[in-house]
Length: 447
Image 1 (cartoon, rainbow, N blue to C red):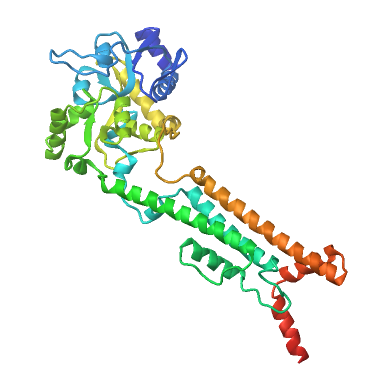
Image 2 (tube, rainbow, N blue to C red):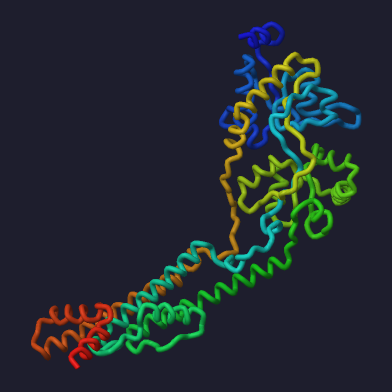
């Protein structure tokens, strides 16, 4: 094609590409490199028809000017002719644009704050549910309904609780069983209480379950409220600058630091002076993320990089405020004939949705919480309590069945009927709804 012929005539047969390792832009996979920038480079090379060889920057730097005026990193390699292109999350700045040619940005970013989640969140309407996880609350609801159903069935089966199904009204309807169980759960009580051993076994087990459950709930609630009282809610740069509890800093020698250093805004100048005074800079992105996870540090960085950290670590969150919008660009020599074609290729990829696809591909959330422990009680931490309740319900049901069997055997011996027949009749009378009411209605009709 025309692009391929053009580059064949005026450029080397293979372009030298310099880059830097940073997830997810460029990462190692065996002996190969992959990532957002490698995919972008592949798409651009297909459009322009050139071959390339990728090499990592020798000094591991993006590119900044030292006191003597020399540039290091990828910018320096492009300036000295050691590389034809630099493709990485290189921020487009005026100082870099003076010494190299930089393309139309392939990604927009800004400056934001990375914090541990509990430092940035505000109190919600349903924080009273936070002592337990959603799974635990579902388990508690299931235990409540199961216990109420068990009380309802057992009080109907047990002859010690309901001796004359033909004439007596069973006091433990299903609604009353629900009310009784709820009263026990809130330590308020609701009578009448079961008289049979089977019903009392179930009730005692539920009372024990309720006491342990409430103790765990109030313990977790108290600890969460205590930690909240010592936490500082940081929503943006103004909150960050007007507090002295949380340390904050950015990457040393980065464009983020240059933004605060060169800003005329009093707020941003204050942030820069604080970082310079406390020397709270970090040497790498990984160090900034690690310190943010520890909880007493706010890492200031470029929003797309912080979004990646949030996608990988569930305990982190990025502040909503984003300042100093800028873009990431590809750098080439200032007199390179590549620049126009590179700009067109990037615009075409953006219009075709390829850049958005690559962003979603490499920024997919995996939420790798390493050693993070939630303050909410997990279902497995309360499994012993649920096990005791299950055993109690099963034991109560078994006792009720034994009580009914005992009565059926006595009745069978007294009336000289098969035990199975008597048991079947008893079950039919006890499990049939409104037995006593039907019997009373029949008596009234006869009268």
